[in-house]
Amino acid sequence: MKNRIRELRETRQMSQEELAGKLGVSRQTVNAIENDKYDPMLPLAFKIARVFGKTVEEVFTPDKRR
Image 1 (tube, rainbow, N blue to C red):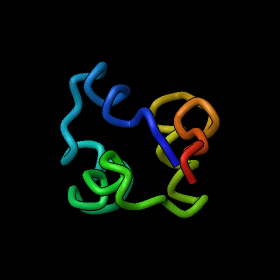
Image 2: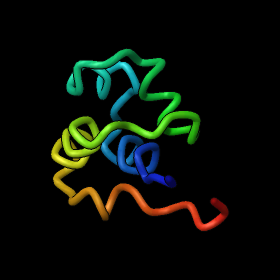
Image 3: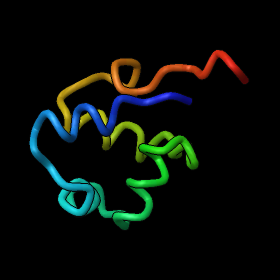
Image 4: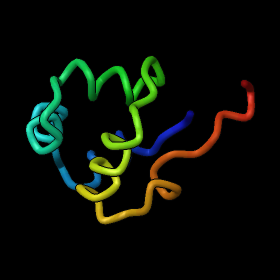
């Protein structure tokens, strides 16, 4: 899964720590998701999309390499 979390977060001048607080996860989790090391489960993916006012499809896209 590819995602636009870093782009969306930086556009809003939000730190990983701030985003993590809004999501109820650790900063390390946000970092892992941003760096394509971890694909979030659906409930977290929906929370992420909601924080940015986007749909899940606008935040996450399939990785064509897999």
